[in-house]
Length: 216
Ligand code: HEM
Image 1 (cartoon, rainbow, N blue to C red):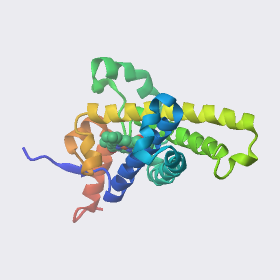
Image 2 (cartoon, helix red, strand yellow; image 1 turned 120 degrees about the vertical axis):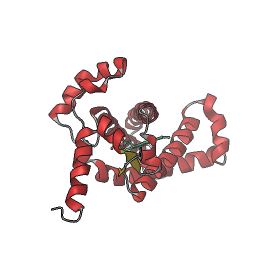
Image 3 (tube, helix red, strand yellow; image 1 turned 180 degrees about the horizontal axis):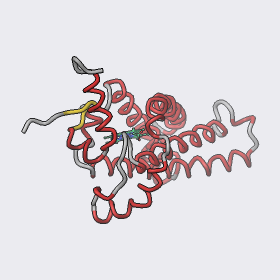
Image 4 (cartoon, helix red, strand yellow; image 1 turned 90 degrees about the vertical axis):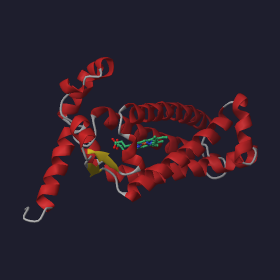
């Protein structure tokens, strides 16, 4: 049987996403290189210790700015609804039995994806806000040392939570078969949409009926 595909992301949205991934990787590894002496060897990938220290904040700002575009494109679909709270309550059934039939119907994103989105948003805000406070080249001279110390702690904590969130995100993208192609090719099969995002599927079908000749 011929498969039907639905558009999930535009080319620009996908380019935006993969640029965030690359810069997040660069910011993450250059940050780890500065985090602990055991990870000092990572500095060789960024041109040595001095360069690592110079480029890390710029990678971070790059992630933040690029993520802002994603934030504004996807925030509407990530707003929390009553049915999301029910989805979270039912989530153990989904994880343990892999039985999606008992879950509340889902729109473009399920509650798990929404939590990932908000966790990323919050972590990036904390990373930027705290990072600026101890950026020696520009602002740190005006910031009291105790404030800088708290900022360093919160910066590391946010980076840790952000990394865990990214692991959950990547795992879910691979675990739910057929999801990766949404970000590699921009489309998903209609079967995938019907099964995992039934409300979004109905919306897309309605849109194509409306756009068809003779439609509304
Ligand atoms: C190798 C790493 C990654 C892979 C394989 C991956 C894969 C994906 C896939 C397949 C989707 C589409 C999901 C769907 O439409 O249901 C997606 C969406 C998304 N990804 Fe990633 N991703 C990766 C890393 C990241 C990173 C590092 C970030 C942020 C720093 C990120 C942020 C997002 C956001 C915001 C969305 C839109 C979904 C939403 O708003 O909830 N991704 N990703």
